[in-house]
Length: 196
Image (cartoon, rainbow, N blue to C red; front, side):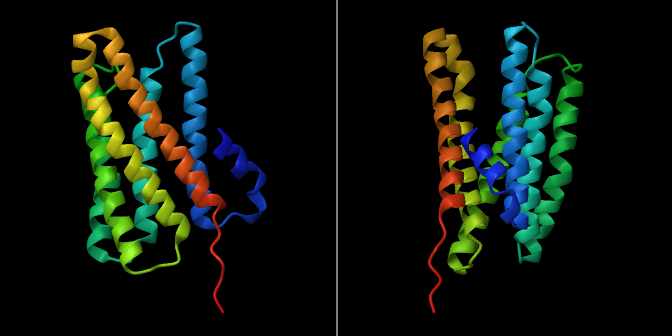
C-alpha cells in the first residue's frame, strides 16, 4: 500500500517504466482490497484473483518485452504474453469456471515470470545498463515469484498435514509479498549519483 501511495505523490515525475510498475502495483492493491472486502461478506473472491494474477504476470512480461533489446528474448516474451491468458482460461474452463483458485496456473506462470526476471536482471546487470528501475523491478519479481512458487507448491501438502502448518507456509508467501513491495520501494527511492 505504501508503494502505491508513493506513486500517487510522485505522479508528475513518472517515467514510462514507472507508469507500468504503478499499474501493476495498483492492480495488486485494488485486488487485495476487493478480496479482503468480499471475504468479510462471505463472498468468494477466487475468480477475481484468477483473472488478476494472470493479468499482473502478463503485464510484468510486457514490461520486460518493452525494455528487452534481444530479439530472441522479445520473441519468447511476446509468445508468453499471449500464451499465459490462454492457459489460465483453459484451466478455468476445465474446472467449469468454479470459484476455485487456479493454483496450477499461478504456480506455472510464477515459474515463467521468475525465469524471465532472472534473464532480464542478468542482461541488465551484465550490460551495466542504466535502467535502475527495471533492475529493481526484475529483482523484486525474481524474489517474490521464486519464494511464492516454493510456498504455494507446498501449501496443499502442508494443509493435509495440519491446518496450522498450512497457515505457517502461507505466511512464507506473505513474507515474499512483503519483500516484493520493499524491493520495489527501495528501487523507486534510490537514485544513483550521476558521475561527471
